[in-house]
Image (tube, rainbow, N blue to C red; front, side):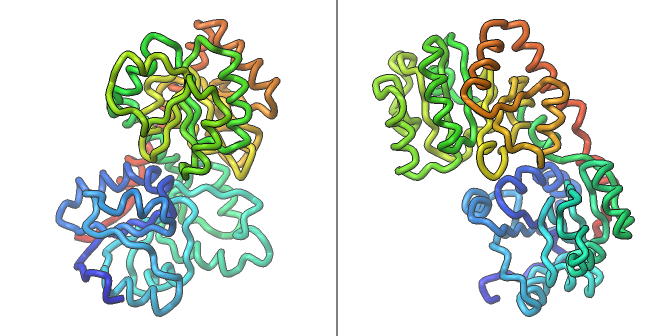
Length: 373
């Protein structure tokens, strides 16, 4: 534990990975502003969060969360000395929760969502239900989660909504300008594919061939050299360029049809230049973030594995998003969106309105949590 710096009266935020960090960021920023004299400690479970945000100016220290043992939890909490702990969405750690509870340190879980198939609601989920009892207040995304928790005797929960809406809405108001993307797009319509996997990219390759008048930006979820090289090899070599290969802005950039993003961190700003978005992951474990694109008013398309994502289900119900299972379905939706500009704009407006009308979770959370001075 010697690698950790000692703090007094810190505010501790824990995130599983980069996605949860982005989800909890509005609360982190608001707390930082409201309580500027408290040091802020951030912990991550995953390298995808730690490596990207280990130098964030919003924190006084950023660490990997030590293994969840009684000894580690006791020592770590003594070192950072938090007056409050705020965890995001899915993170439940028995010994950390127990130590916070024993030391009377308030613990909040924000943007939580619960489903019947989770272990909390199984006959063998006693230990996990005990963890929920250690939480001071659970801020859940929807009424369904609230009702599920009541079935197991958990009543210290509040429906706040999902803080991701606050995050993506704020991002859409002040996105980072990307001159290279402006130069690449020029006057062409632009299709942006975010967080793609090989199964997604196989479909996109056919789409690129079918729409030569459109530009395509593809941002794979994994950016290792092998993955990027394989993707580029599937596309027209003379019409495809990697972002890292752009040495300067010139009219030559307009001559390419496909731009492959081989870095992390650009995607949330890329969507401002798009006309249609495809979100990857739906042919694997589950789709990635649809809200970043929806916030910019883009029709959103994704694969079949979306049932665990409330926002995706809502977008489909509202007709601001579409799910596809194969190339034929993708082609049909894209054909309709590209052939009718008015229809495409109407679908995009529905997506943007959904985000706008769903924001506000941060204010609810901030008005309910109590941070000792």
